[in-house]
Image (cartoon, rainbow, N blue to C red; front, side, top):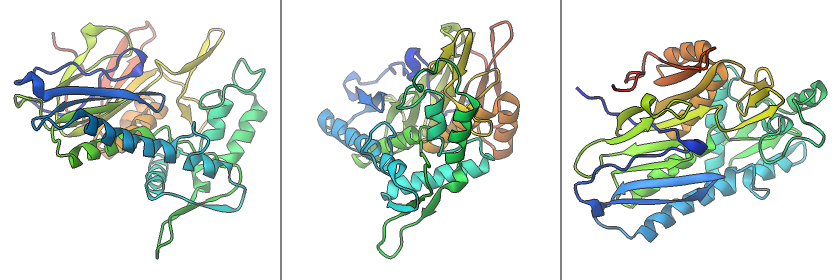
Length: 349
């Protein structure tokens, strides 16, 4: 029996690239896309009722704009940036959606023993990622004093959320200098919201993706599962995995596209909150399957931080379907999978 789940294809630039399915009626299979969050969103949908594409686009772009307005650390006027700029001791009111994502992020921070942390904004800036470039005059890694200052302002345990009650909105206390960064979960959350918006329009069969994170719903025209390829972290089409996808979300985290270099040294944008440094191991990428893309997003980050051995053990303990791609000493790539991974690890001959 053929198993059917959802997965994302890695492509140049780090964006998922979904091969066009074969449609029973080509007119029903429609494609939309556009820029968002410093990357792109894309949609392939079976549109049997021929809903106006303008209405579909508007529904997607409305929810994406809401996520950016609430959770972007690049937008200086976002709700997240407003919290980051608040003075010490100030309690900041939060939109319900932002509070819910922060609560979920805190859940994964605790579950992972701190391998996931939504309060790494200062550390991200110290390493030269995020909205701020590397500090002036810094060509290599940050010095010990800079890292110490960044560590002192962070820590997910310092995030004090208060749920809304009796008509009062949710809020969070700014303890002083705490810098939120939801890069490890907000994009997945946006994918979930986009999928919900499509379903509210009556669409039941689609692939919706943002920057390599994807939700598959239903079937393609003709009744077959959506098919998406999973590539290794190098441009080697022969090593791609083609998987049938239906009603599942995926997210991929890896070090191929977002790196900084100094001389012969390179470091990933994925920071290990436990060491205050980029994750240092042979893991090139991790892809995770989950019902919700926000959880897949967070888990992919966690497993990337942990690395192959610790990450596989963590995934097995939680029953998380995950595929790890490791970089060997000779430059070749090797895949390993958690016990819950439902597919093989080798491309079909």
